Image (cartoon, rainbow, N blue to C red; front, side, top):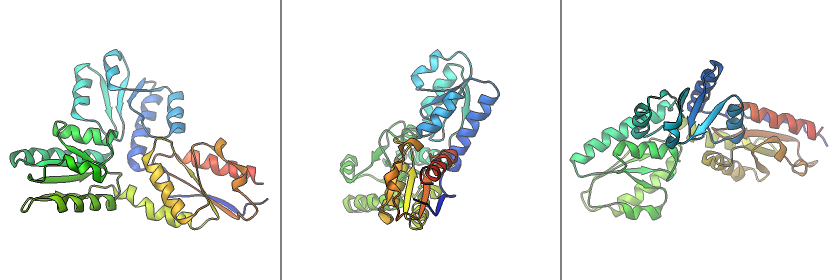
Amino acid sequence: MAIIKVEVDKHSGFCFGVVKAVEAAESLLKQGQKVWCVGDIVHNEAEANRLRQLGMSTIQKSYFEQIKSGTVLFRAHGEPPASYHSAEQFGLTLKDATCPVVLKLQQRVKQAYQLQKTQNGQIIIYGKKGHAEVVGLIGQTNNEAIVVETELDLDQIDYSRPMEVFSQTTKSPEGLQQIVALMKGRAHNGIEIISHDTVCRQVSGRVPRIKRFAQLYDAVVFVGGTKSSNARMLFQACREVNASSYFISEPDELQLDWFTDRIGSVGVCGATSTPEWLMEQVAEKIRRVVS
């Protein structure tokens, strides 16, 4: 059995927001500081374990009062205002690694909320309920924003009042368009719906790129965290164009029967939360097991 080539997708791996957060954690750890990250720094178990081995701990905000030293890290997803107030209340040293794209969106949502309050309007967030970024966004509205993820959630909205819609940065532009179209179909005559496409193009742009990548190979190995919604979305994009696409979280999950004699090339790719070093490890193991 011989593989002609095994290549790693150069467009896969951390987005710049995740790079910023991981580099912030590494910098603090190299200084010998104890780092307390609020929630998973990235939805990738291997990368989270690597940082834990370097001394970083993952905590929830309820743990703030027990911290006596070190630095609290806010990850790329962002936090609601209450988290900043709590950190200040307990006198904690804070490193804010919120993604700049998310931070700008938080500011826009807050400004829109203040304006809509004067017009009896509503803020709608198209996003995943309970997701860290969404929690941070609704926090800008005194937790009054309505989160819609599917058509079933649209009944929460009052269609006799103005609406302003924002999207979680990692949702799809097509999904946002569909939700807004459904809202417009329900809105009372004369009621204004303002919608903002706040999807991060660095994330959404990966779908067409990863499809092009997956089409180039006989088989595709996608490396992603089990808790990453971005990984699930991108893996599905691979499957749509290449039926011989396989999802793993670590090299030990590779199966030899994926690489039959008909396989002449394998592409390795991953999510915005997948570290490059992990994809390289997977590629190297594929080269070893098929040689």
